[in-house]
Length: 541
Ligand code: NAD
Image (cartoon, rainbow, N blue to C red; front, side, top):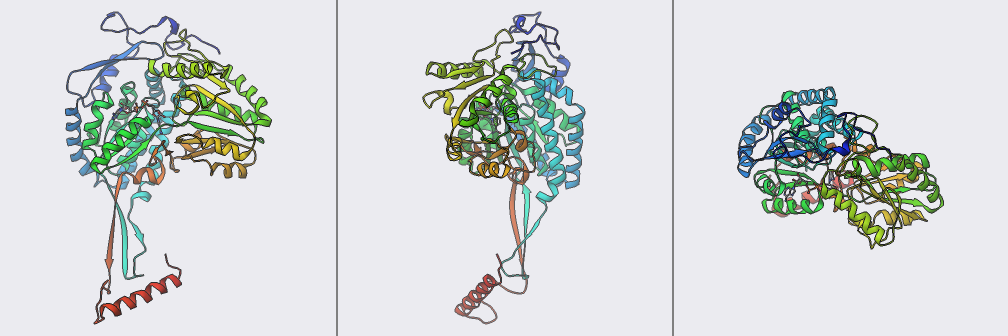
């Protein structure tokens, strides 16, 4: 694995250790502090308490972040309710126009967004690029479709012609959005975009590792012309701010770990409010006998190591037909070993840093535990402190068994296990093992066969001959998890309908739905029974 110097900073990343500006007065911030203050001024945070944010890739300080309190959350909701009431009355046209302006701004400011994501998350530029792309696609999609998703729909009334019924959708009110650090721009924004498109206000809390990318998103939302106060942001620890957010929200959208998702679902149940939960995964790839092996090997590298495997839809289990196993694995290992690692923000880096010491420890523990119990390391297998504090090599394991933690537990890092299979049935059964059901991929030249296999995998999204991006970037299709991978869906109709209350308004003409015109109860029941039989005969739903 190649290890270039950082071209952006001109510094050798290994010479940069964590520097606390409070104790190292000469430590230089990597980011322009006027820019950071401009962003953090947007936070609802009044206590005066702050924390210093560091680049995970280089250890350099990035800026000082104000911390919000539960009182700040309360105040933000109070403002949001007032703004939400006005925004709910805005026209579809007004919302669409603002979303398209946001789309354009994001593409215009793409480089600025990617720079900040790289600094804050430590990821490679190619993986940072996915974020403005995904947010722009989402903004354009809901700009173009919100009218179709939200406008009143005529439904079939109980009495043909004489019962006219319409389904109306109205915004829930104020939506709380709690997002993780791994895709700090896209995860902080895409769910909220659907919420404001539906006429809601948003209070969001990005992860404490990555508030700046989310704040840049908030700045662009303001610049796009959405009303002040429609989308507010708080910063701090989820265990402190999560409870007051859920206590005030009309709906909660959470993306993060399954453990936190279950706790949030419990709090929402107490208040009888809805929530969508986008949670963890242990995603499989199936490489069938007739797959294009080069294409599958390239896809497996992206599926396993994009953003250092810190991606909810990334792959940690690779099932390969026995007949092509050795040939495929040789290609996969060769591509993995050729990956370029580094802390540079320039294009051409294949994998950056992990986010934190905790994440690095989990990855290291999973690999060490697997090796201790007999797994073989085919590529990678060790930390790279020479590149930055939290770097770890892209790692391929062979011979993993259910006795090892990385067999069923989500690593959320650059570690993938390869397993052979002999029959299609066995491959499907292996893919369906475990508690998760988020994403899968199937590689085969026989598309009909691959699609048949896909529909038997218990995952919310399945990609054929692509790693994960085909489903993730197709915003018209719902995206989310089955089983322990979540509840509800982002994207598509489901992604916006979750933020609405449905109301059915029926108007009855001429008839009354009860005995009238002198009919006895029994005669009325007889007429109605006959009418219902007739409708069945006429093929009516
Ligand atoms: P996490 O659950 O620890 O944190 C996610 C967010 O929840 C953060 O903003 C955090 O501050 C907040 N939080 C933490 N405890 C909370 C509490 N008690 N109440 C309210 N909020 C709380 O998750 P993480 O480890 O930071 O993120 C990685 C996980 O997220 C992985 O499991 C990954 O698979 C999952 N993820 C899923 C998707 C998806 O779309 N399905 C996308 C990205 C990440």
